[in-house]
Image (cartoon, rainbow, N blue to C red; front, top):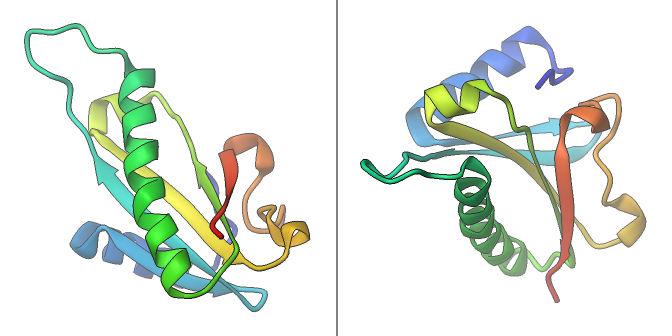
Length: 125
């Protein structure tokens, strides 16, 4: 996924993800959050990557919903990229943000291409 942020900002996000599995930054006055999740396939069993992603999505969404509720937001928009390298690395990175207005639930194209993200929006309240 190509995120259009200054190199220094991206380096900080990557470092934070490596240490804390989460990071945040501001872009055009909006807070964007990143969350790294690890996964592994059960040994001895054939695993379907889409099933693993579905479980990760639900786990991450639960955490994001709780965060949105605690900050009194109405919507959470979540995005992730599925890439072949996810299979080998055992990591998936999510990017998300909150809003109170349905019209503000789309990732800005200046930040990340919509064609590179699988996105969904959840109503919190």
